[in-house]
Image (cartoon, rainbow, N blue to C red; front, side, top):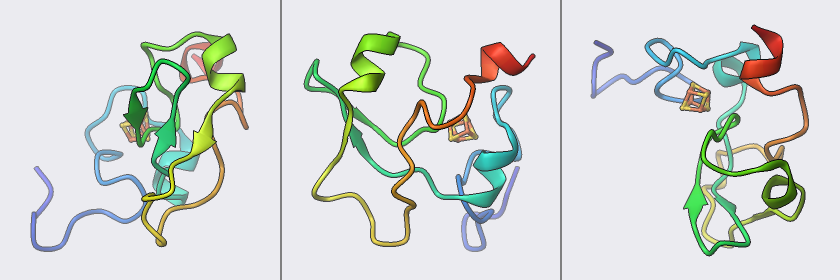
Length: 81
Ligand code: SF4
């Protein structure tokens, strides 16, 4: 379990997430707004389809420390395994 006072860089879950890929340890995911009205900060969201991913935008309240790279910029975790 990572230290909560010194969390991992990039995505804070990348050391224990089963779907983590290289980008997860390199870039903090932006908070993304989906057409369904949901928002999530994950490079490989698993509960949205490709159509929703293609219409995703960075949320106005996404952290400044996060990258601008939205899901879909690289192959999905499922496609790389
Ligand atoms: S798949 Fe999502 S939750 Fe898992 S490490 Fe990557 S960005 Fe974080």
